[in-house]
Image 1 (cartoon, helix red, strand yellow):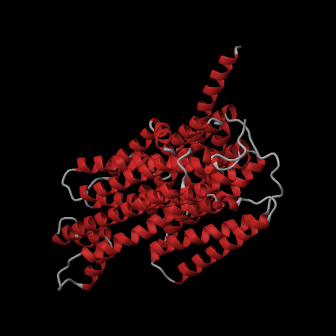
Image 2 (cartoon, helix red, strand yellow):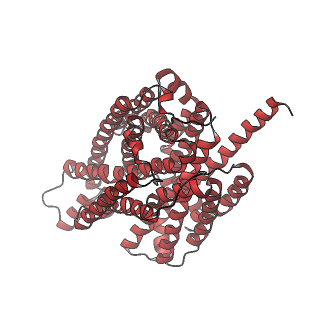
Length: 507
């Protein structure tokens, strides 16, 4: 076989391996949102309390976010392929357990195990990409595909859930994972290369504990503030998380083999990429979480149609694969990230205008620049973070990127959710003689308002109008935050691609 034939074969194998990695991350992304539509039927069968419903939804993301740093480091030590395949098998087993849960407690346990398994898969996918694609241009394109799957899966979740729930019971949204997992494990065993850090040093259990103690309380504080409002528990959890984070950073500085090299944050390109990514995800997910409610409660779309209505943003993000290389080479990485975020900010302003329009067409068109801009920025910021370390340390760097993503999602829903609530109550105009019970229900949220007064009443129309105004304000706030992220990227991330690469690159 000639050298040219060997090269083409290796090239095809790399992209086939990428398909496996993309499938794994798509599965995880779908699973994070597929449960939303299943809650009503699940509640009828398992009769969970309100607190248990919250834990069924939250425990997955808490476990996922809390373990990313630890599992990313373990993947560097034990072998990324080994950890990825083990985590995928565990994900399939936990999915089966969730599907056949007979009590709320059993489902909470299954969701916890799903989060643990997901934490082993996410950083391993990125770190394998870092080692698989040694050419910088190919790696950027591969990460673009990975980013599109990660973001697109969030939108596909409600679609998949809607299709399954039309024919099957609520457990089907979990059981569908099992045959998919089998295919991924077999394909991964055949196609994925093994890689690890040849000199990882001693694994520090204290650092692993501190990383969890830093992230989990912070994410919990945000989620608790969203569901119950800011209170003592939120403050205590946030304080505990911040204190643990300080101790974690101090310990890493004193270790000869740290779990995370915190000195990376002294590099403006690295810290700027992380910060820009957090702000962009913060703005986008915070808005889209409530955008789904707007489509269903104001526009009157069913869950399946609402999911389809969000597809323009997803399709635009996928289209980034074709332009990311050109944008980075023509503009430079820093300017390309800033330009992507500026385009997304413009799209969010168009969304604010289109939410008041009669036709959905304008809203669908406005979502295109949002998806395109965020997709471009996410791809290049993730690439900057992963490329800032040698391949041997790719798992830990990938974990930083994934943890930033999870924190951005949690903070976006919490902060922009508060903006939606405050603005909704400010724009709501109610009759002075309205009964206290009805007033409380209408003021609480749009969903409780429609349940209390019916969708055809004048009060329902007033509540829908107030919610639309609130969504427009929130879209403008999200646009301002995205512009801030663009400024951060422009000022901190160098536009010369080589300055983002580690000092010692592989040959």
